[in-house]
Length: 102
Image (cartoon, rainbow, N blue to C red):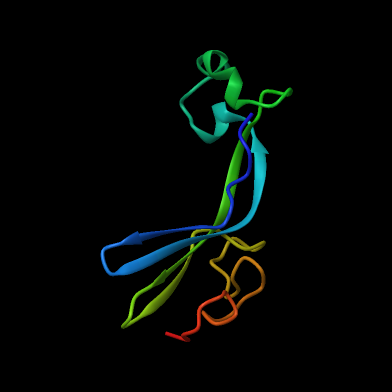
């Protein structure tokens, strides 16, 4: 089975993109990747846990360049909205680990 994603960064041109992990979920792959079926996933058993679930990491991205910084949250809050906080409760780029408020 896969492991949850870790915090990592990659340089893309003049910017640095950092993945900020927020957690993970173990989900039925036939539901998440519909119209796939459990039979389709049988050949990928190395990616599944003992209950046949696939690990899905969740998090946000911090994109920084000399001119600007952006915090991209690709998840929903408990009410189904985008929310205002980062993965660790951050509300600004400096709280997320950037030296710039952007």
